[in-house]
Length: 180
Image (cartoon, rainbow, N blue to C red):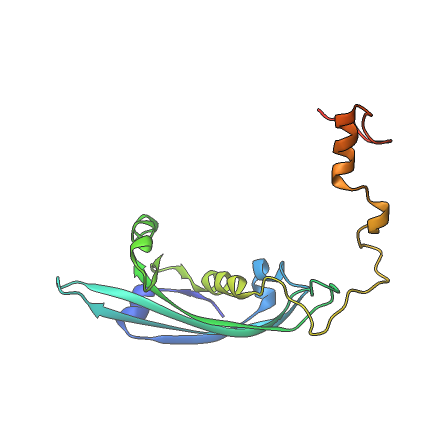
């Protein structure tokens, strides 16, 4: 499905669009996941509101939900995560106008709309922002057989031990480099 839309027409006609995007079609989102399986269901609704000065403002509401599989921060295996949100945007004619008005509008994010607006990129952006910062399985414990773990604590030198040796004039630790 093509996700390029004309935001003015969507708002002018009070239209609603919906669809499903597979994670495979969202490369930035897929790059943050353990597997590209999954999909995002979305709905976009446009509308206009008259202003007292005789003009009008255009708006877009985006709702999405889906299941994705980021890597668990403990075991690194895929973990199924449900994401979703509903966001509202005020549409303007240019990026410069959006940057100028966005800090002033507490109710809506301000976006530059247009006849070739990439709704798919907006859905992908919002899905990325909806990802949990530390995804993990319930009751997950790190796999002790993984070899990519950091070296054991008893083998690591304490961070201030090297500094203390340098201050005493004992030089850098064996095999280390001289500080610059």
